Image 1: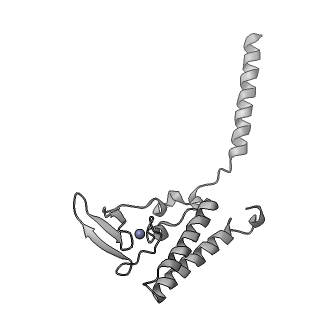
Image 2 (image 1 turned 90 degrees about the horizontal axis):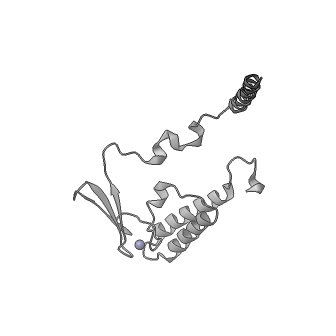
Image 3 (image 1 turned 180 degrees about the vertical axis):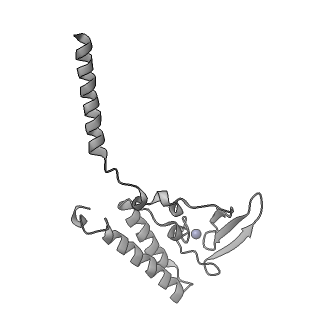
Length: 153
Ligand SMILES: [Zn+2]
C-alpha cells in the first residue's frame, strides 16, 4: 500500500487486475460457453487476489459467481434462475456445473448494506472539532484539579 500512497484509490492496481480478470471471464463464457476452465481460472485468480489483499468483492460481482466451483453464473448458460414462494418469496440460482444453490430473499423494501448511505465513508462527517474537544477535556481536568486544590485549602 505504501507505493500507492497519495495516488487516490488505495490498492488501485489490485482493483484493476480484479476488474480485468472479471471482464476476461465474461468474455470467455461469451465466446465459448462449453469450455469453462479458463473462466474458472480467471475467477479463482480474482478471488485469490481479493483474499490476499483483503479486498471485498462487490455484491453484484459476488452474486454472479458460484462459490463452490468458481464459475460465472449466467442465467440460461451456466445457471438456472427461479423464483419460489415457499415460506417467503425468494430467488433460487442453481449452478449447472455443481448444483450449488444460492438463495436471495425478495423482501419488499429490503436494502443491501451497500445501498445504505451510512456504508460509504464519503458520507461520514469528519470529526473536525476533536482537538478542541480534547482541549476542553484537558481544561476540564485542570479545572477539577484546581477545584480539588481549593477544596484541600
Ligand atoms: Zn458451481
